[in-house]
Length: 187
Image (cartoon, rainbow, N blue to C red; front, side, top):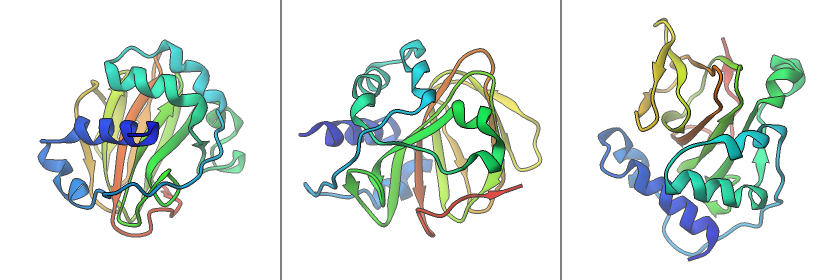
């Protein structure tokens, strides 16, 4: 199995057996299809060596220079300081090396001391923090700490936000339904 396939399998295994993940895994792509990527790190990747986690976190950190790290927003959305501490890479989906138009899977990286403002999207989403305890908000609820390994599901159009403290956050994400490439609505 190639590196992208191994990483995607690690993501799949991380959520296997979670009831909230079942609809996402039902749409998981099969087969050897691969899409070319243009590797590129973002400033947020400088915190990858600070992450403590299991074998999946270590594999993602080792592979990071060969992954295509992206940002959905521009400086006009949340400012340059946010962009310095935000990025994601997709392994499965419309932009990842493993093509799928039904499900997207990858990881979100947030540096320390950043707020990812409340946003929502048509896609249903499941986060699984892999490294770093952050504060998470869903709907009108107050921010609350969520430890690594705790699944965080979001139904379509439910606003959610995150805040990091002194440590960075690496979280697996799964999306399904709607336009998998759509930019989130900011609240």
